[in-house]
Length: 257
Image 1 (tube, rainbow, N blue to C red):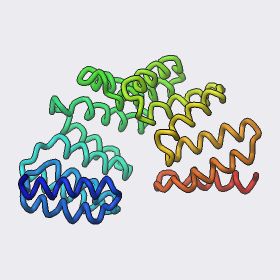
Image 2: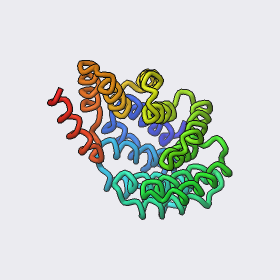
Image 3: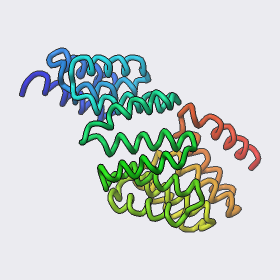
């Protein structure tokens, strides 16, 4: 095994163990040994993002593109960084760069769909979801986004069909089950919504959105103690900047209870 391969594997192991700092050190060494190692660069970007260094992550992606590494996955990662930062237009431009690659087209078009959905341009979002599914009929990302579009339009039967298809393709993916839980909650089926939230938490115990929905379910069922427990779990696990308003609202509800 070449030194770069060994260092990359060690970096991956460190990343999986939650040691992002150690992973970054090893992956930088792997790239020094082989600057065209696309997998090492993608892993390094993940490590840098875990460390909260978006600027360094973007710099690595730019360096990879200049080095002639296969570009599609790098463009997707770059788009994800901008999307998370709320720069939707730049994110879309990055995803569009990746869409020309046949192997990445499914993920790219699904990601473009998400940018349109974020801007409440549902027709555009649906069109891109359809393109994603043409490229990859089993794109879980596209099916979940399509379900979101249908739910936003009040087309709950179509939304359920998309989410259920996604869950059947990847039963271990918590997102599809969460989407179904939220749909059941919106339709007033609290028992099924609770069951699905529990399924999500069985797959991902730190899923803050599932804890939030579970808290809402208990509140609607006049179970304040259980609601407070779920809300506190939400506050414990939700750390994103975009969730600040929801956290403040939940804190106010807890104080009221």
